[in-house]
Length: 60
Image (cartoon, rainbow, N blue to C red; front, side, top):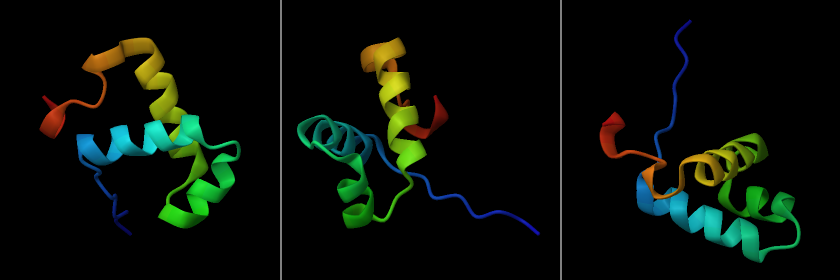
C-alpha cells in the first residue's frame, strides 16, 4: 500500500515554527492544525541546524 504524504509549503512551515515558539504547549498547536508533533520538532531541528536554508522550495 502506498503512503500519502502531505507536503507543506515554506510559508506554512515558517508560520508553524513561529507559532510553536510562541506557544507554551506544542500539543495545543498540533490539535489546532491537525499535524503531528514530531513533524514540528523535526522542523525546529532543521531550522536550528540549517537556518534560512531549511525547507527548500520544491526539493531544490
